Length: 263
Image 1: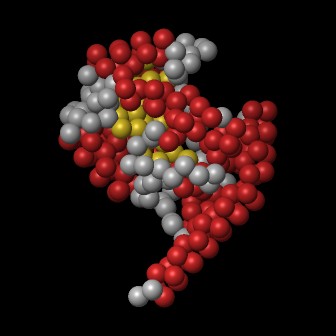
Image 2: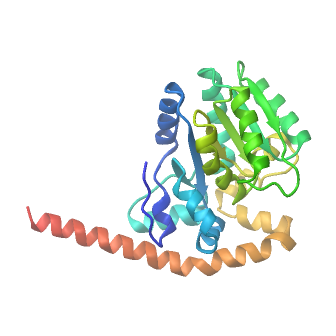
Image 3: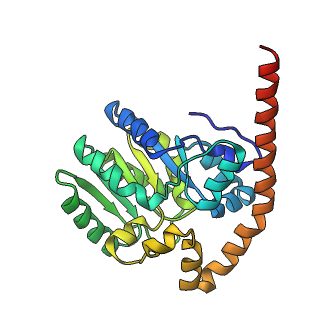
């Protein structure tokens, strides 16, 4: 799959729904072909404007989905609606598919304790699931370093065909891009704090908070020192993203009108 390399990060999304994503991953598993999955949110949109290495990594992702209500709403404004697919919610369907297709799984990121608990809970939930590697990188880990290459070779040696990356952005997306040449037969999925949620070492917002699209506020209230500035930056780029979405919508409308006039 190819991405439009424009100033509008909304165009990076190339997979609209979870069924579309699962169909694509199923085909990759069947062919023993690697892939990567990124989940675009406002924080990523901020980083994409600031960090060339992050932009380069995003362009190399196989599948990009919408992870965040604002991104989903903006895509609707563009006239190209997509489903909300948070990265943390990809773990269970992909682990279930891996168990069904006998694809070994690796867990990379977080802490040794989190990985151990998450592995136990995933294998209990999905009979037949094989977790063949659990790796918690040291502090200061860089995704294009010699240490990263050694870790990726260990994943390759484990036989894993699916790896959940719990490193946070931009490290997990950069590592997924770096891994394409080193572990070409493995799929890398960037899931942020997803393994912590499964292990119970972090708590996700209650379902009712998620349903009213206020999970961001719940997170910020839980850790204001770390997140207030991040969300301020996210809100600051919303006007520009809205203009980009409207321009994209106008172009599509003009194109459609032109095509109808030519028939």
